Image 1 (cartoon, rainbow, N blue to C red):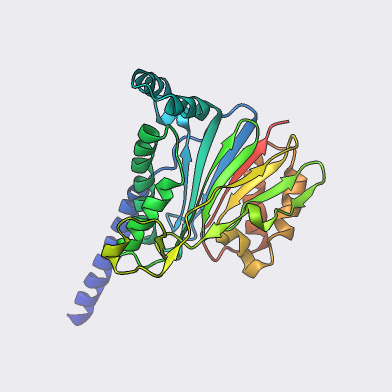
Image 2: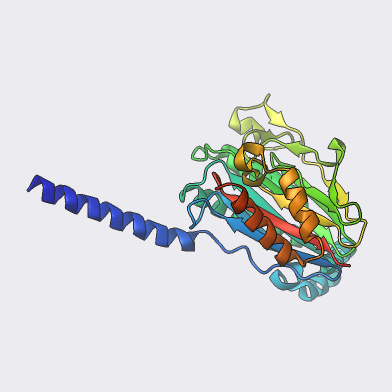
Length: 303
């Protein structure tokens, strides 16, 4: 009798876990449509360690499909907001990408990036209403909300950047690995100076220095500086920009990156972005079994 009860309990637990896995697939939001920009080719890959969902996340901001830019431009013109009109028009020539990573790769970690996903998209509407584009303010507010939350106790790194049709990439980093630039002409990863890859503490670790509500949190002396925007230019045709999580940089205890990635990019440099992403994935798996979630986005300047 005790054995039968134990078996029933075990089967019930297994059934509950399978049910939770099914639910988790729907709880983690989709990244959205991959932006289509003239002169730029984009493709992203997410490889959850458990094969279902994990702590990594990619979110695409295709201004032309997520928002009715023409309607917003007409509304801003009617209100006499010339600067907002200008920014809204520029959005037709750029696209945004958010890459985030929660410390951990369990199914429950996906819930935290789902919170970030929805907070970012909600904030984007306010940003477009007020400024005509997404500004660093959105991450300042998200950082404040996560910092004030008594339930969030995990590190969450994030990078949000925007790529233009000219190949200019402007981004903010909150504790996230720096982007990688591969030169097609020279066949190698190029060094980026530290002053162009400035990063800040992970989301929620420290309050923002200009947080107007800081007095209410009781944390007046520990704060981070205001986010600043970095800028990288893809100068040559066929140059490749890689946005990535630490699952890639620390793959095989750091033995794969950067040399293994550089070899892979050198061999795949003439492929489209989806082909390059496929080669990177295969190269990672052939090198060693993953020990963490791995996500990356390939941004290639078209030849």
